[in-house]
Image (cartoon, rainbow, N blue to C red):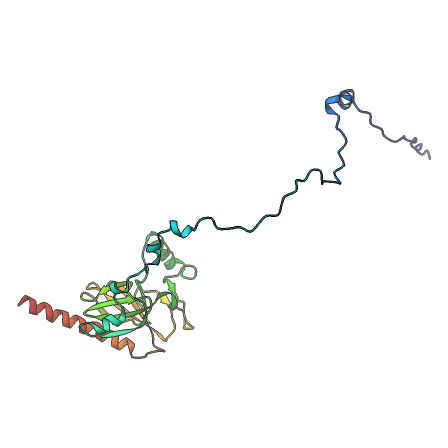
Amino acid sequence: MDLAKSARRVSPATAEMSQDAAAIHEHDDYKVEAAENTDDMSNYVTKIDNVGPAVTIDDARQFAPVQQLDKPHFDKARGISIEKLENGGSSISFQAEVGVCRGMQINAVRKVTLALSKLAPCIWDQRDFVSYGEIKRYVAIKDHVLFVYAQKADPNYIYTVPLSSLKAARENPKKPHKRTVTVSPGYGEGIDRQDDSLVNVLLLDARDKLAYQIVFDTRNDAEAVTRFILAVENSNIVEKKQEKIWKE
């Protein structure tokens, strides 16, 4: 049996510099001088004398509107606090800490999600959710007007709600209004349930359109809901009597 002959020994590969590369290597413009020893940098550093502490040349306050800065940002004399409501003229018929919101705000995007919620309720929510702390306010009813404060101690209200054209109704949690929002969802059945201690009172206009959603935490005051509804009803009765007297 014939076997192939073994390969001959091959010398290591070598590379020679091309003529063009050699020409560049030998050209003076491409030669690099050896780096200078910079171990001793004392010759290159300029000595700086000691710097004294910074001093104030001008007082910036003399250019500032000092009189305006010293004035209070709000004149309490022009505000209407809860204390002023209590002391002036007629008495307050109701006051308490509640949640206040306008309910679900319908826009183009919300209309689309509401339509999708009917097709896929497990993905798209039919109701909006807010926390009680997010909408918590302090309210007072006086002279058929609802005064809304951020806190009881505030020197002025945030806004007012005329109650003359509104009626108050307690919401049925099993049949919630289509424009109310779910506040601090609790442990009830379904995503539409909120904690049983939170009760919604609806301020509705003549067409039963939701104007405001008032949320009561009945753990703090179980009778607040009834008092609020009666206060709204009484304020409307008083106003109608006054209008009748004026017409006569």
